[in-house]
Amino acid sequence: MDILRISYKSTNYYFIKSSKYEDSFLAFDTGWPGTYREYKGLLKERGFRVDNIKWMIVSHFHIDHAGLSGMLLNKGVEFIVLKNQIESISEMEDLIKRKSMDYEKIDINRIKVLEVESSRKWLDSIGILGEVLITNCHTEDSISLVLDNGIAFIGDLPPEKNIIEGEIKCKKAWELLRNKKVKFIKPAHGKEFKLIQINRKKSRFFE
Image (cartoon, rainbow, N blue to C red):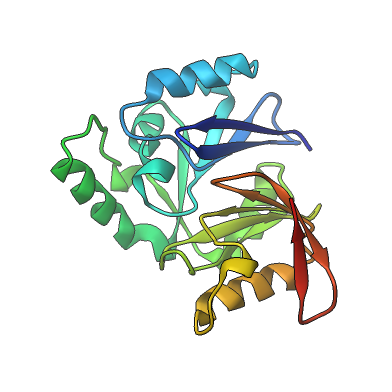
């Protein structure tokens, strides 16, 4: 499976190629508000265009992860929003408005709302084997995309070694990923790293 990555302002954006539709990609996270020109240029450097992006999902609605979603939606990219994320759209847009940032609003009437339990069926329909998981540690609307080949796109889920005592949601998120046999982590910030399974209760990280 082809996976591409671009990075801008310390944030990584990933593109997973469909096995059913030629030269078609699912984008996981989009760019900062007002950075479409930079986003398009980075895609061009990797040898493809915005037109190749047919679908998009965001890990959560913070401006560095979902800021270009409205513009991409207006350019014909299908926007899949998990049910637990809907309320966070207006929160992000209120922040963008207060900051007076260049931004195209997300047309709620044009998004595709998906239950997490239906994610595998939908992903299979576009030629990607995997599922979406709720990993609401960083924010309540945070999700991860886990592929059947063991690769996980986790957004801002903090590494397990950085979780402090009492962060139950964070611990449960990593336990869920381990239960799904994840082997390789692609975070929104920092380097990609392997998740080595030690046993059912512990794991180690290697960059």
